[in-house]
Each structure stands twice: as structure tokens, then as C-alpha cells.
Length: 159
Image: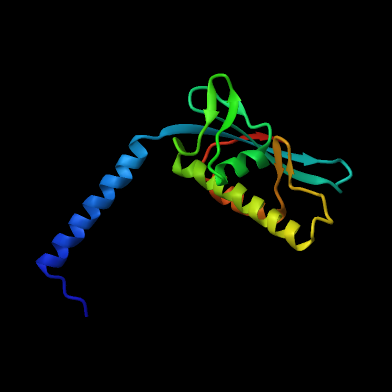
């Protein structure tokens, strides 16, 4: 059985206040980046090919096409800046995504990590990639996760 004393309660609130201060200070200095998600489903008439792709646009004031999603994810992971044009350079140290958009970025990181691990196991004998320039292919197991996430996030659909 747990008994809280006034002292324990005060320490808890002080600790929370300190954590809140640093969390607020960190997000205060960062700039929100908007993320637009385009979902594309390709269905061939013969029924043999059903492909699902995502593409992205990012920016703080204006949206820019992410021309290489794999490179974009690598730059986020390595905390490197990526230039999108003369008016926008993505910098993970100063930019952040809305919580819901971050879930999509996390999903793409999961795809990236899985592909990287498979490449290491196969000793690069297989040169196929789920990342195709500005598109990323979504395998069946990831499609379900994607729809669970976008249940809360607006996205564009091309069928």
C-alpha cells in the first residue's frame, strides 16, 4: 500500500514543474513544419498489381515536395539539414512536426530501419527498395498501421 505525504506530493509537483519548464523551453525555440501526405493506390485492371504509395510535402510557410523520402528520413535520423529551395531548409534541430504528423514520420523511420536491417542480412545482394524517389511503397503490414495513424490526420488520396 502506498502512502503519500505532503512532502512526497510537493516533490512530485516541483519535479513536474522543472520537467514542464524544459519541455516548454525546448518547443518554444523550435519552428513547426507542416506535413502533407499523399496516398496513392494503383489497381491494375488484371487484378495482379495493387500498389500503395505515399508521397510527402513539407514546409513551414509553403509546402515543398520531398523528392527523395529515403534521403529525407536519413537526414532526420542523422540530424542533418536538407535544402528544399531558397526559402526553406529543413533542420531537425530547429524544426518539429505536429504530434500526429510525427507518427507518420515514425512509420517511415520504421520502414527505413526494416529495409536497412534486411539489406545488412542479405549482404546487399538484393538491390530492391521500398523507397522510390519521392514515393515510398507500403507493404500490406504497414498499410494497416498507416490507416490507424491517419484516422486522426488529414491526407490526400489518388485512386
